[in-house]
Image 1 (cartoon, rainbow, N blue to C red):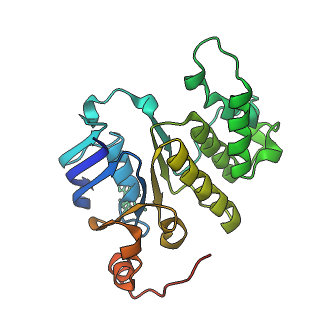
Image 2: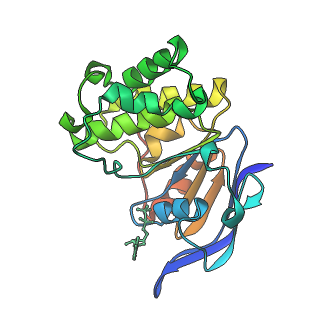
Length: 246
Ligand code: ADP
């Protein structure tokens, strides 16, 4: 069964068509990158997948059921592009926010145990904010808060984790650690992951599948093939110089 199935989906905001005839799937165990330049319609596609927008035509299914009928939202972790607004008067520490990501797994009445705290520490250090563990969330910058929310989603271990351009503002070293952690969650916890990026190079080394969107679906398949220059030119509409990584 596909975790996400997008079938011939078209969408537009008022008169402007943004997505045309998109068909793609995220299979169980996939680590998929949704790639495309800014304004290509990536966020729009994610919102369609999550049922936050309704397609003009076509259908979206989550775990086999039409998105409008889907109920198991706790299976899905979603990190939007911008950090979620937080009540500024609420004096909560970074550790508490991330630990809250474990509550769904703890069950009522169970106190966080060693494993929970370990998962929190691991996620915080992957996001390079372990030093802020005891800090108040409100004292952190917007970018740091975004990392806290990513850490919270990581520890909640959803079946499907969707991250929309999560890496804005992360330096390349942190980025590396971040993708490494995602790859590990994918491998060891069998977490299915969909990550949105306009940065083709960094993410493609980690994923098993890419979907390239620029209003239409330009490529869907393994990343290796895309790395032929033609693939990238196709995506960005101009010849691209390939830069070696690693
Ligand atoms: P991406 O995530 O690839 O950068 P988006 O899905 O955010 O692209 O946007 C695709 C296009 O849709 C852009 O031209 C954008 O300006 C437009 N768009 C996005 N959100 C809205 C909206 N709420 N109303 C009208 N147009 C929008």
